[in-house]
Length: 173
Image (cartoon, rainbow, N blue to C red):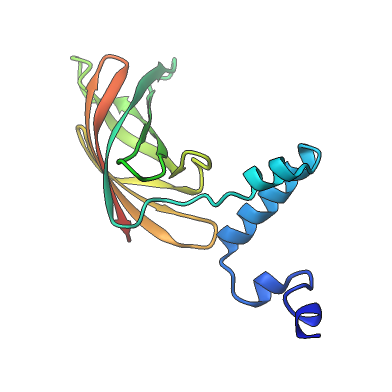
């Protein structure tokens, strides 16, 4: 009787204190299981947990660099990449830095705005936020998930043409 009136009732997980981010992932998994026809195999794949490596962690990263320029004289640089250590789930990130050219030599941007997304590769926009410090390839960002859990990200990146490589350190904010 307890199970029928408790855990088997709709909304039980939220009332029991399950974090909002986990509830959102479960709803998304249920939606994709329905979209695949609800097969047992599709449901099992959709319900697979999506998790970051245990915090704090440090990972080598690689990816791409894209630049765009507007007629107004502003520019945007997008750094997108992935990383993983042996035995951990891969992570993905995207850093967009908006600004004005910092000099005539094309040596970077004076940042006027930014956005950062980060998460497991299966859910790369789980955490979103902004760059809090920019010094060449040394980038610090603060990101949060839907439940308010905050992370601090530190990138040490080398850029070469349209490629990037380096390290990412992530920890609780």
